[in-house]
Length: 188
View (tube, rainbow, N blue to C red):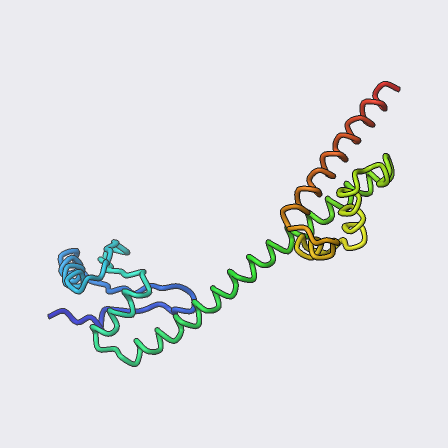
């Protein structure tokens, strides 16, 4: 029977998941890999500095392997670290998602406000249809508001998609005005 404990190591799970067993010959390594596979655990083999290394990279497989080896205290420490790490990663993913959504909202709001200001300066908001004028005035009053907040501020309230549709129409009007003004400037 091969001695796993003597030849093996597990990396710091705070950094990355890696368990390995180092052997002098490829035959020993292949025998261990086959034995590990009998427990339903996938392991790979790599040559390093003239030695054969059997490795496992999957965190669940490392956890199971620690149990098989009877390293129950290490198994529990490993699991605690893995749980904390996964919780931190989950929180970070949610923060990244929220940040991306917030940046998208702010960027859209800035662009919408610029478009409405352009319309105001070059055409006048009073010349817009009332449904567009109301949304334009609300956006200027509440530049940080979400679509939901704008929709709730309308009287009567309009759905978020209705507010978004009107803001897109305002953007098209601003683009048409910019194009028209550019063409007039080029003629002069």
